Length: 520
Image (cartoon, rainbow, N blue to C red; front, side):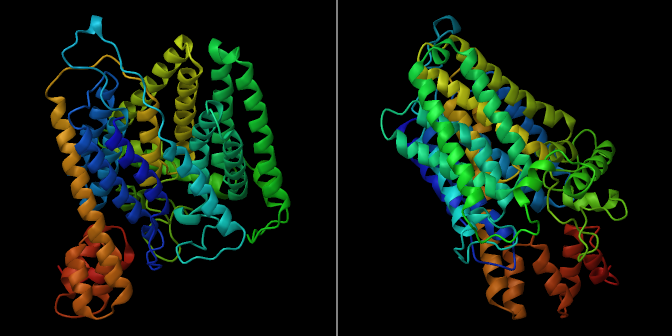
């Protein structure tokens, strides 16, 4: 990475962690929309500065094809506002990846003379962002009550949900280990960072993240054993042993120190360990039902899916009676705006082909890391490859059981880390690929405008109650379902217009259907 792009992405990594609003009426979006805005702005600025230096490589073809199929799918969406939001996150994440990776070689060099430039140092703000995430979670867990924290899914810190905290720690842990293993100084501080993040991971009680964390450690240890330069480095083994002690201290602190969390179980952490693979009841059974019905939905739309972000729009039509994914208080609406799996979402929303392209992109990154790991001649080079494998397996594993890459913050950190840790490959010198960058820059800019409009409309909804103000907010953000429904229920000459708009956003929502009755 060049200096300017690096600074932008490092600043964005911290900003996206702390970005949140106090619009409590929008319990999910008050966290997501500000983070969407940071993602788009960072992608736009970094992409503009890196525009001339970015060169595409072979693995990028899978990512480009994934974006192209997602864009085509979005054209046929029922709810185009949701489709654009989901697609824009993917496009901006890809732009962050390319900006973090930077240029690989002058395009005029023939393949036989290709010599990649030395890898840039991994931006310290990426692993520092993981520590900040953990700190905000611990602050809430031990009694700090701030308006930007959510009480519904404590200790969620500035992410609003304890599961999101756990996901970030799971896929971000390799970055902390990398920083500690190759550090020339301040090793103790990096050990304390491991303690903090481990304690936060335990307190979240996220079984999906615990499974992913175990997979990350196995991959990390396997990578060390597979690398001659790491396997024979005694200093590295001593540091790793010390880090395990720091991690053990984090586990002990989380279990021993009294906290302000109100779990229903007498032994909540033991219960979570015992039920880590339980799919016969509770949330485990709910996931199986949701996955099965989502696959049924995908069979009706095998080629392009139901469009990015539109799972919540179409799923109610395929849900069974007493489906755990459906809301009890809002008939015809899902509890969450996404399924409990990235990969189920990609298959059902964007189709099998797009999902396969994304999977192949990650596989190509992993294979490249394995190849570099075996050929590494320095500890830094080998550690970077192992860390990349850890980040990838952490993101994939958490994404099997929850929404991860669907959201702005995880997408930002995973793709930025992947770009910074991956070494350049043989470049593809094709001018047509430059149009992909231009398109992603335009989408990132539009995404930033869209997120800003959402925040303005949310502010009006929260602070004003007169119809004129709410109508103005609906013009600013026509895709705000809650705003459209409120105006539809409030009467007035334009009631039917808002009722039909709400019904068009969520065709299966009973409240919107009732409001639109008699308006056609």
